[in-house]
Length: 482
Image (cartoon, rainbow, N blue to C red):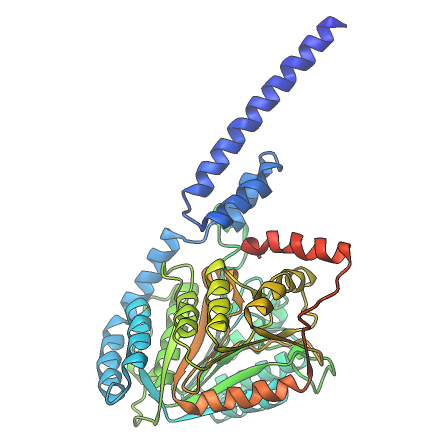
C-alpha cells in the first residue's frame, strides 16, 4: 500500500511540475504579444486550466499581429503605391482649403496612420435597411460598364445572394470586369456550385483567409475581413453594416436586422477602391492589377469633406479605436453612438463617462437583444456605471439593431463596418467613412432620433435577480476576449 501511495505521490509531483512548466511557457508567449494588461491576464487565467490545449487555442485565436502577413500586405501596398501617391497629392490639394484646425488634426491623424488623405464626396446618401440598400446596389451593378468590385464578410447563397450573383454573371458576360472577395469563415456557405458559374462567366473570385489544412500552422482563423464594400466603375461606392444575406432584408424576413449603409460618389470612392485593391491582391495573390489607372477615373471635387478609414491587424495603430477616442474627447455638445455590440475597452469607457461628466449629451443606442446573449450581458454590465456618469442609454426593441454609427456635435460623423468592441478595434479588417460637416451628421442624427421611437430607455434603477447579476458580471470578465 505504501508503494502505491509513493507512486501516486511521485506521479502527482510530476504532473504538477509539468503543469507549472506549461503555465510559465504559455504566460511568456502571451506576455510577449504585448496586449493590454487586462487582456493578457484574461488569456492566461482562461487557458491555465486547459492543460496543453491552451497552446492550440491561443495559437489560432490569440495573436493580434502577424508580421509575416503584414509583410505580404505591405507588398500589396507597394504594388499600388505609385498610383496612390498621385491620388494623394491631387486629393490633398482639393480638400485642404479652408477647413478648421480641429478637422485637420483628426484628418492628419488618419492620414498619418493609414496613408489616406482628406478628400471629398460629390454625393452622400444614407440607406436604411435591406430594401433600400440592396435596391441601390443592384441598380449600380446593373449600370456598371467597366468594373464591379465587391468585398463582404457574409455573402449567403440565399435569395438576395443568388439575385446579385446572377446579375454579376450577366455583367461579366457583357465584358465588365467582376471581382468578388468574401471572408473564408463568414461566407463559408458559398460552395463550388455557387462560385463556378461566376468564374465560368469570366468573373474573378477569392476567399479571404479560408481555413485550409495547408494553413493549420498559421494563426489566421481569428483575423477576418469584416468589410462590406461595393465599387462600380470607380464612380460609386457603398459601405456600412449590411452583409449580403436575407437576414438583412425585411422583404424576406419580418424580423430582419435593422441596419444602415452609405452610398457615395466622388473622389472618396478612389480610396475605398484602394482598400479593396489591397485586400484583393493579397487574398488572390495578384501583385499586379493590369491597367490600374482605369480603375480611378478623374472626377470633379465635391462639397463634402470625407476620409476613408481602413484598419486591421496588419497595422499597429488601432486606427478606428483611436478615431473613436479622439472624436469622443473632442466633443463639445453631443456624442450619439449606435452599435450592435457594445463591449468597450477601458479607454473608450473612460472617454464616454468623462464626456458625460463634463456635461456632454452622451447617448448610446444598442439592441435590446442581440444575436449574442453573452455580448448583450457584457454590454449591460457597463450600464450602471455609465448612467451614474450621465450617459443616456436606449435599447432598440423592434428588431436586431445592426447599425454602426457615431455623431459628434453637428460636424463629425462616422459610419462603417466596425463595432464598438475590441474585436473590431484590434482583430478584424474594417473600413469606415469619417465625414466632416453637417451633411452626414444631420442624416445620422435624424435616423438616430427615429430609432429612439422604437427603443426603450434603460432605467437608472435596474432591478436584477442575483443570477442575472452574476451572468452580466461573468460576461464582463470575458470582455477582452469578445
